[in-house]
Length: 339
Length: 271
Image 1 (cartoon, each protein chain N blue to C red):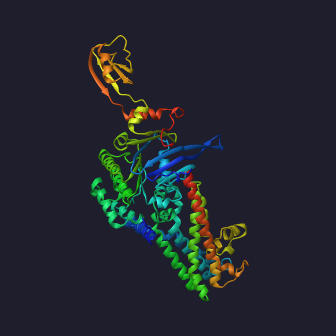
Image 2: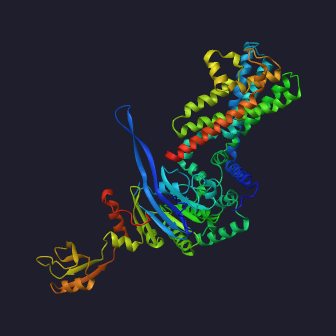
Image 3: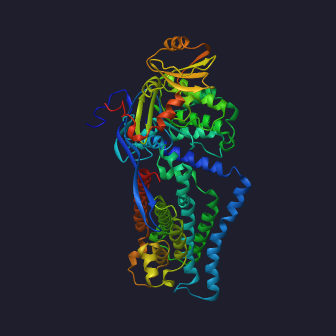
């Protein structure tokens, strides 16, 4: 069955068995080279509903940018099917372009030598946007992204943060249904980062625009993305909420106990795992498995006198780092998006 | 969103306006470039004049006749170079991401690249070529007929299309082979030099290849024969001299095919 036939009305991005191969020439001897085929995206299944915000994360080289380029019609997939807004991205590129917005952190849609304001005006012609609609959207972005101070400055003189706020505006002036963002906060100063993040948060909440963003910034993920799609080696290794991710990859709450005097043998507690012994045996760290905090604390209190106790919540950073370190052959199969 | 009639044209015109504003943002350097750019074309014409200082005929053509050929070649090359010449910068567009950026917009990729990187400072060269062409035609003692009058306009236009096609087709090679710039130059600049003289000055396989294998004889040599009312000294029939516009159309079709092939390759390799 084709993707189009099974398309539901609310699904705005659909990919099935999406694959992208690159041919790499590897030196073999002085003149000989042999070709090697590498899959940057290797059988990706993905469904995104209208209005969702999806964080698309994975280590460098996992295939994130390649996926976005296939979804936006820049690259032709080697295999698989893909529909965005019900359109085939490469074959119907210009029609799709009117309905999506794209911000690639390392690329620019702005005119380098012209004032920022001119780029916005040019894009109105490029996307054939009615003047009133264009003006209303620009007013909105100017207010939320604080553009007024540098609207008349040539783009080449803008700071990266200012430019990125300009790029965001440029991508939204034609009222796209889907906004694709590749590393929108990379390299930004703290103020710009907050501004961009807050803006995207609000944009996602209104539910009118579907957001799909790649990022390495874990604060972006925690703030913006109710749903996370994690890819590695071109495959989806996780698709779900952040809580699901903690659940699945065994991120545990930690109980850190400081003792008055070290015990001869660190005690074994049911339902908890001894993670670390530090400070000459005076600090014990337990990871909670089936046991609750109270159980572990009362267990410890019966064996030693406690000076201090703290509970550490699981950290997304730790989970993602661990996820990235997992070798590909042992990663769990994709849990969603295969239906 | 409905595509209003003329909407796309308005968009392209806006891109052209933006490019004009960008280039004239540095006014002094723009003027210097404008003047400096005439240099090369003036030199090409001077070379021919110098040759006629030592000979009365070149490949069987007088100075006045040769100037018609020179004028056509100079105008056609300079104008094509202005309009399409920068397409040779494809490797740069790939590297800077401009190619991806234009593919994300609801307009054709080739017209966007040409308009966004239009080297307006080369306008002076094209104007100089036009002046040489008009002067040469006026001085050539042409026996004017309606057909020749049409050809006097159609031939330079066909020459522009032909050179433009050569620029596009050779630039497309760099989608496959980044270091192909020298090969492209040998065809574009080589073609310009070849078309500055009557093909009768060349010989053997070289003439066969450039004049008819690649079609450069139709840029200036054959239209000049038709305008001057001369039979081809090499013996080709009369109608061949009127074939330039048709050859240009074929060249444009081939170049368009090459471009589409190149873009498809880029999009399937992401090179």
